[in-house]
Length: 181
Image (cartoon, rainbow, N blue to C red; front, side, top):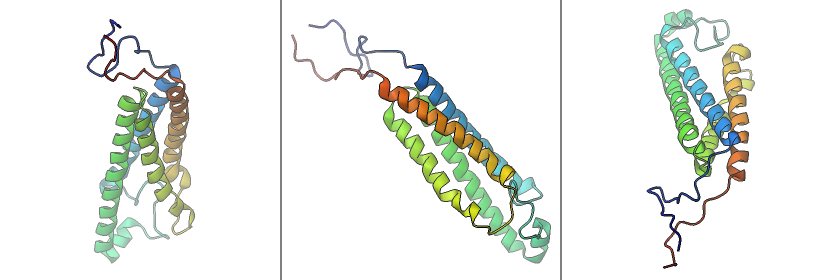
């Protein structure tokens, strides 16, 4: 008969362990990247209302400034603003989700939280990035995509460290009903 009793979270004190440095460092880097995504989204949003260009790294659309386009067709500029606000909202929301999943779930060693954060980042980037390489408009790729690539590198390094740490952590024993007396 064991004297160890499961705690509220279902783990007995004999199965508690300190998370490894890889999980801690990895989850911190993943959360930091999530915060960077949030910041990028906020900059995107601010530039929509207060910027002279269209978005970070895009000063003109084929030589046409935002002011010139607004004079030509204000509805097009309002539509672009509408899309920028929606895009910023989803960038910020994804950053919030990744940050929370990394800080609370991955840091606790939860593989499902790690997988969800990775899927969220991969889906967002896999859908958003390819259009930037189709030469449909001129943009300064360093200022336009540089911050996203930097945050992505930090995220990937963090996800790799966290995954290795999660997979190497000892698993707590099954805390189901005890068959002993």
